[in-house]
Image (cartoon, rainbow, N blue to C red; front, side, top):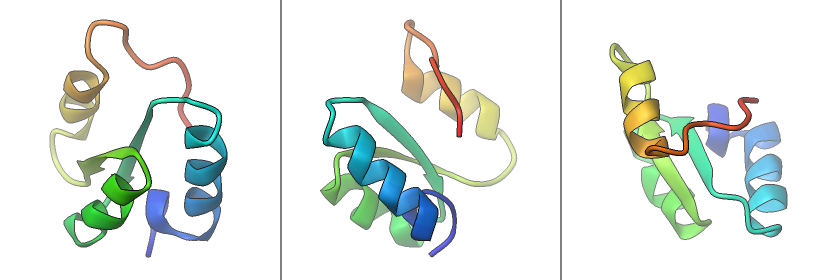
Length: 66
């Protein structure tokens, strides 16, 4: 499981969502269900990633990127 669903990513997901942070997680579509179960908005890899991240973030934008 790479990215947000991988070793370091899954640790950060749990740490951040546990503190009430809205998390956008970049990962393959195969990991989207795991991310959603952990309170993450999944964003798939590939062309157009920046646009998908901006759309998922909404008008408030992105405060941090790890």
